[in-house]
Each structure stands twice: as structure tokens, then as C-alpha cells.
Length: 167
Image 1: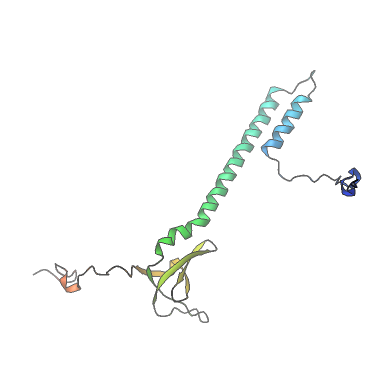
Image 2: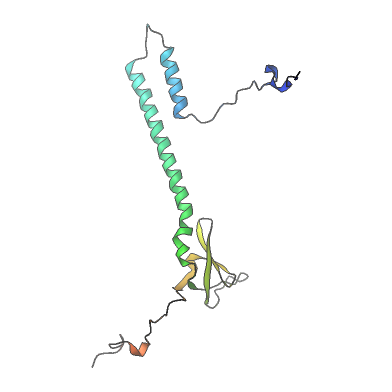
């Protein structure tokens, strides 16, 4: 014969009710329905009070829907920097690194982007040279696989230089 687990006895069960700090639309509807069911038939709830409670319920539902929409928007914004800069993987970027001790801007460096991540809502580019830089510190982006001048030299460009007058 199997013994009964003593933790299942009623006197061992939690008797203290833990209230929820949130009053949602389901709880609001339950309260309203209980109130309607238990009202005194000789003096029912007046229409104005009932309409006021229904308006409160409608406002609660709209507020909850808006809160959900804002949560979704925030979640989309958190993913956005990575998606926004993912096209830069494989591109060569130029940037001014900073000396961590002095905070001074050093000479411009160039390296290829190997990955994009996010830190505190900002895009961080991992570079081939081991550096990690914020996307807003980039001064130039180029595609190392493309010919930078498309087969032309500066001397092959037709027309006068913008600084030269036409004779």
C-alpha cells in the first residue's frame, strides 16, 4: 500500500493569499460581473454608474493595448542597430581611434568589418585588426572587392577641374 504524501494535507497547504499588484481587464470584468450578479434587485445600479464603469473598462483595455504596442516597438528598436549596420560586414572602414589613457584622437586607421553587435543600444563593429568601434566613429566606408576608381585615373576625367576656369 502506498503512503500519502504529508505535503498534500490541507493544513500543509499555503493558506495566505498573495494579491497581484496588477488589475487587468479579466479581473476588472470579474469584479463588474460579480457586482451585477449581487446587486440589490430593489435598487439596481443606476445607468450612469454602469456606463462609467464600462468606460473605465474600455480605457483600461486601450491603455493595455498601447502598452503592448510600445513594448513591441522598443523590442524592434533594440534589434535595429544590428540590422541597420549588418550590410557593412566585409566592408573596409576608416576611423580615428582614441588613446584610452589620454583620450586623444590618433591617426586614422582602416580595417575590414568582420561582425556587428550591439552595446547599450548602439551598433558596435568588430574589425579584422581586433578593434571594436562604435558605428558613429566611422569616417569612410569602402568596398575592398570593388575597384575604387572604376578603371579611371584622375587624369582620365573629362572636363575641367572645378577649381580651373574653362578657356
